[in-house]
Amino acid sequence: MDIVSDPAVMQRAALEARRLGRRIALVPTMGNLHEGHLALIREARRRADLLAVSIFVNPTQFGPNEDLGRYPRTPEADLAACRREGVDWVFTPSAESMYGIQAAVWVEVEGLGKKLCGRSRPIHFRGVATVVLKLFNVCQPHVAVFGWKDAQQFLLLRRMVEGLNVPVEMVGVETVREPDGLALSSRNRYLAPEERKQAVELSRALREAQAAAESGRATTGAELVEIVRKRIERVASARIDYVEAVSMRDLEPIGAIEPGATLLALAAFFGTTRLIDNARL
Amino acid sequence: MDIVSDPAVMQRAALEARRLGRRIALVPTMGNLHEGHLALIREARRRADLLAVSIFVNPTQFGPNEDLGRYPRTPEADLAACRREGVDWVFTPSAESMYGIQAAVWVEVEGLGKKLCGRSRPIHFRGVATVVLKLFNVCQPHVAVFGWKDAQQFLLLRRMVEGLNVPVEMVGVETVREPDGLALSSRNRYLAPEERKQAVELSRALREAQAAAESGRATTGAELVEIVRKRIERVASARIDYVEAVSMRDLEPIGAIEPGATLLALAAFFGTTRLIDNARL
Image: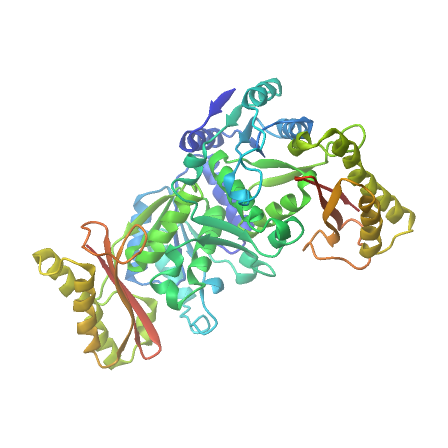
């Protein structure tokens, strides 16, 4: 396994591998790898000859009052996990090598980036789109693997790839969950024990709404949202950021549920920890 | 010579050529090819195994009151010229195939795009950066060739390539001029005979300023601008849009002339026709 921190070195190696006909997969991460990441890494491993995992806590996707400084960093454990999973390249650039003196070039995905999480995190998706395009250009993947846990991110990046004609196949992997249903996230570790216990209600609320849609008891986006809201509002330590039922095409709220194209997404605070989860219907 | 209009077909051919180890050069154009374009094409021809020329009048770089509709289109003559120059691929996409239903993904180069021409053409460089990145992704060039005639465009695209880690070598070619000094441009054909005669003063003014700098008579940006302004203000049919002496790094106005890093740039209207020219010092 090669650990590469210089973008130019990584790019040269990737371009050379491509020239030799090798198929490259990339899993972009911010490190602190958990089973959710490992599911992405295993999916990517199956799809390519050479597997790159990037570990980069991207400063441009954090707002001024967000948790960039305290975002968990566990480089030793991450490298060990990558080694176990048969990763070929771990790309760990510094912020300086990725952005130089200033980040002056941005990729903007109109519309999608300002909805759902984009409302409380106005610069987040611009940072995400920009860094992922940079990582694609550096690592030259044929295929890239992302989690449906970050559904808005995945839909927005898919739009970016299409809009900019980026020749990368985009693969989404289902959310990995704790036994009780809580979606895995590096931010779960911030939860106090009582918050952790109550956080399970997020996924339960989504499952309740999903069951209501499947049984025909709920037929509109508003009904789905109502089911989720009601349940989370009963959770003492939770404060809802948003609950929305939207079309996966444009992230606009839907009237009637569109089977196969509906995203039920939420964000909620437990103390200062912001968790997200979603279900596709 | 292959004439390709489908971006997916072009991309497949380019990726396959890369996989076979061929070196690709791209010259992005809006067609109506003149000797200025041919200089770019000849430079590109020398630098690669396979030469792609794109011909695409990109709607997203024209403002609502600009000349998109009447921009000269001469496809037959362009193809004949490409054939004569030994071009391998002419890529001629439709606006629909490049932008789908809506152009929702943009590349923004902060700073550089809002200065000089960007002041009177606020969306122009966003459109240029976006379409050039798309053309790069479709045509997969190792090297791309641009004209110094559009100095701001070249500097901005070079910044984009650096900022997004795009693995394309950027080459600039000196402006080609008429015998009297007027920079070649597809828009010269809009000039009435008297305007055409007077338009030569743009390049003469730049040369006068350049000579003043070389002889030490002018030592500051303000003096260079004054020389150019004075001369163009005497031209009956010309209306100055801007004359600026800026640093090539950030396009900010300079105090003392920085040898090797100073751009003296101007835009002027002759009737409704807007011409640009520049000199590097």
